[in-house]
Length: 140
Length: 161
Image 1 (tube, rainbow over the protein chains, first blue to last red):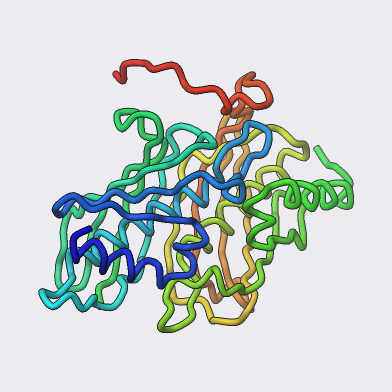
Image 2: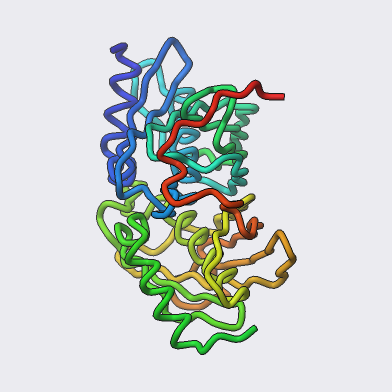
């Protein structure tokens, strides 16, 4: 694991809610994939069963937070304050099956105060996303 | 259509207990009826999103608002049908106060044949002093005939248009 990856994972492990979701990060160069292994407590519809829509939104928001944090990490590796969400819009495309979920974030613009980030989440096929998120963050 | 409020509220309570994520967050439905649902979650250590301040993660607020919006749709329908979130927008106004329960009030202000529209607000004390607000659209009869356990089978691979 690269030092950046180790630092970001450590920063993430310090966030109780990221642990509650069971989020893991994989870094290939500057491209990060967030992984949410399936766990029963993530279920929102027990009949299908399907992952809770709020959980998918939360997972993608955390993915955006991690990607922005990676982009803002100093050369000495000290992470900046966590970006604060201003708003998020979630599009639900397919129901989340009870299997692992992956997400990748794309920073569309990083200004001095605002970051605009798009995220896509998928399960079986990257080309068939289950949800997408558009978000704005306040940088501190 | 009007269902006696106590039937609706006991159904909402049963639904919360049967929904692992609602149970994990400790969600409770305080009021349900007239296209409105009021829910509460306690403050829990595992919800924290910023360890420096102890403020809960935006994602927890997202899940609470999504769940409250869904129950408002159920309250408007007056019956239990399968619904699915189509679209959810959350605006975060301020950090939620640490160590305090969080409430959400959702109102399904338009119930169409296929789609329902909902607004919601999350707050600690007053609904007019929100931590976050939400605007959501839900598909009604979302299961479209899919049977119990349908998601346990892999999806057939299909080319994406």
